[in-house]
Image (cartoon, rainbow, N blue to C red):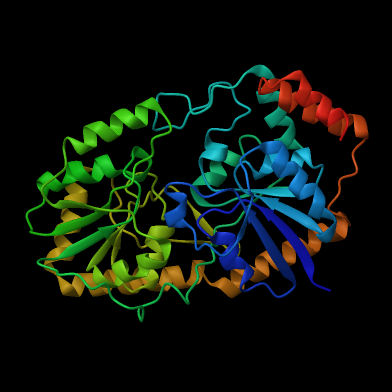
Length: 398
């Protein structure tokens, strides 16, 4: 019998891709409404909530929850599952756990400004939601943050990448190329290391162009100031291009001579994995102190450079521009590495086995908490978010 999984939220289409390869399970994704950059990063063939109103989202999930065996969440999907009293497994990919909402004035290590400024009731709500989960899952650099707060967590470094989309045989972009070209679809922000990269370009001795997607994070004042400073100091090698739809990105990978990944965190992200699968050399900073565990074995990342020093980054860039032999050598190492950690069938088996194990212990998606417990968490959420008494009455009558 197929295990039916309800997924609330999705990050970079990861769950959608995973669903293609599962054999024992089936995931139904309900994502949050796509706006602005979200319209470019989504494939566009998954169900979405009709509104951002939390209680409307809760009502939607309550209407369909009995059709499923277990829930997984990303981002704020965790609060929806908690409010619906589900058995759920949160999956963390970044700022939802490195700067968790249940920590006062939580901030990311690369920013001075708090990401969340929540009151004590809001923090209590999110703390309860976190600890109410069946299990927590993260991988790579995110896992080190998760284990600070969770005693029931798993480290999963595998990420399923859709090889029907990202491969060397994709159609190439029709665009004139005047010189060696790098492509970077990353957001322009500290977390991606854009400032580090741009600072390194003044040390480069070769001639090349970087096609950089004009995409900024602007949720905080600090990010807005960062954007202003970056736009006022664009290196001569950088050409800003408009946002690209997710379906068009493989064409840019095929067009480019090399790809630029994350130059800050010390681990590969999706850009590096996708670019390598298209058999293009990728530069992405690797922190040798970060362990990558696959099937209980440590494997080494081949991505370069292994330093955030601007001069070392410049040397790596110049090496790729100057030497086709080095490009081919690096591309081969990265491709073999990525083929292993993104193997969709191995990734799907890991999740199938996990879903099977968890649903044997938790035989229904419903946690079956007491009425008073569910009412308390809804009330705490509404009061914490400074909503009006009439909305509390609607909960009472629900």
